[in-house]
Amino acid sequence: MDSGQEVVLKQSKPSKGTLGRDLLYREIDVLGRLRHPSIQRCLASFEYKDQLYMVTEYLQGKTVEDLIFERGEVYSEKEALCFARRLMEILSYVHEQGFVHLDIRIPNVILDGDQIHLIDFGLACRLGEPIRTELKPHDETMRNRTVEATEDLSAIGHFILFMLYTGYDPCTSEVELNLGWEDELTVSPMTKHMLRKLLQIDPPYRIHNNLCVIWTIG
Image (cartoon, rainbow, N blue to C red; front, side, top):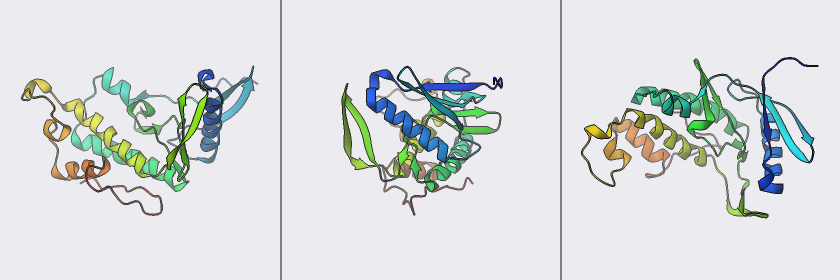
């Protein structure tokens, strides 16, 4: 029976062969185990003509990527940190369930009014699981390391930098090559310290029982 509900249909990439199917099967399994208002639900999965498909709910809103590059949104330091803190609350839930997202980027976060959604769990896997990758067509392997929660923390650091750079104007800065974010961005010492730890420039945050840290915005 047609309910009229808008949905998203995701197909395993034929070019990825068995790996593509395995990754989509895993995403279906992960989403089936997560129950959070900021994570889209997997509604169904099926195979058709030897292709695997996943059906998820359709989310309204715009990705942070669209907000920055299409709408020209500019975020202050406080706005970026507050946004990231809310994202970390979602991520903490994911880690509590024993999973790592591994693909936290501005195209994978949707803002709908005041609601934030973390999407695309296509690379997500269990904490401590070996990272599976594809070296070349029809050649799959396991990397010699397992995933940890710190992988997502590093991605959060880069996410914050993307938001902070929306307020950066190179025309008002001295023209100099090879400047890094610490020279180009004007942020508080607290934020610089936090970013250096998230990006693992300084000793990273410690993870207790696989739970990521959530900082307090002053």
